Image (cartoon, rainbow, N blue to C red):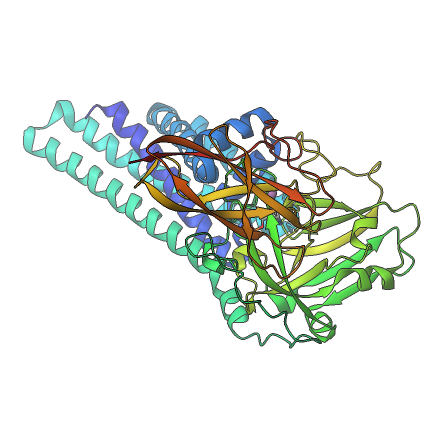
Length: 508
Ligand SMILES: Nc1nc2c(c(=O)[nH]1)N[C@H]1C(S)=C(S)[C@@H](COP(=O)(O)O)O[C@H]1N2
Ligand SMILES: [Mo]
């Protein structure tokens, strides 16, 4: 191994040690003060929309992993350079590490909700990097000097020592990093969540009518584990209910601050509501239906007393993410909830524990703030929520959509009766009819399963007498306003995909 490569690897090991030490330090100062997460968060919030769309298109739900891997690779390249530099010129190499620490510290201290202590992990990490680099530089230097002076045995021995120390640093850094991260983020909140006894709703929970489920398609109620998850959080926010507060403020007559104990005392209702992501493609699965326990948000808004000009309700998460919904929509009588329970348990941490919003009929990105901590009454003219400057519409009612779940696209079926089944939704408006078309034939009405309310999806099925050959099945839904979903294809941006879902089936 060449001397410059040894020096470069020493630099990379020093950087790894810095990150590992920073993660452990973040046990004391909070998960989001760790430099890798802080820098990643800054990047996520500032990437231009086309780059973000590219990342989502290429990496899908792994876009965050891709970002972290990308950040680590960049950092490794930089650290390699610092290591090579350190071989001949120590002071500039230390300056290089200082810059690296400074970037982490500035990122951490400028994150929403950060305090002065959030610089500590970056500073301590950088100090560790200097120590490790100095040590490995000595080892690499010894191996180098031996190159010319001593016999083969000494050369091998000092190189072995260098590699051994490199390995120890790398392993210790990785162990510290992983353990530090896992411990900080989970510990307290898991315990708090497990000890919560959810309050009973003031009215009995809605009864599921017989026949909401059609065999062979997606279940009517989505289990928590299977529920889709979408958010910008690199590290799932861990919010301890005992420290949680919801502030309702801005253009209101009576600002309100609610603690967790206050919230539990409020009247709770339970409602089945289907929520969907605006990024859901036609036929996609970024949609789910759950039984939410929560307190009606309209009563809270009433108590706060919005000023007449306040046409937007902005919800803000502990991590600074925001969404904005029309004040009028939240007050029009629909079951918009400040929710604390999901399918009979406290909200799972990744679905917003301890409290989130659920608004029937609006896409998640304008209405369903997880880890909510603020509700600010303002005007659409005065404030753009997170996704609006990134090219998404400020107003986003859920579009009428339908999906064929069975038979699967590209599947093979024997000639004869085939059950075609799926789900359809026009949340808050309700589904009137679902129709299926085989090839270019007539649109045939499907059987609709029961539904609890207009706020959930509805399952449907149809018996198809399948003849031999390749066939295309298409589905379309009509909402209770009498509007049939458009066959015109549109991408998710800026306000939801349109077009008809179709599958191809080979019969015979
Ligand atoms: N704090 C926070 N809340 C958020 C988001 C987010 O990025 N951060 N994403 C929203 C989006 S785009 C959707 S579709 C829903 C998804 O909720 P789920 O992950 O519980 O399914 O959460 C919404 N609430
Ligand atoms: Mo979304």
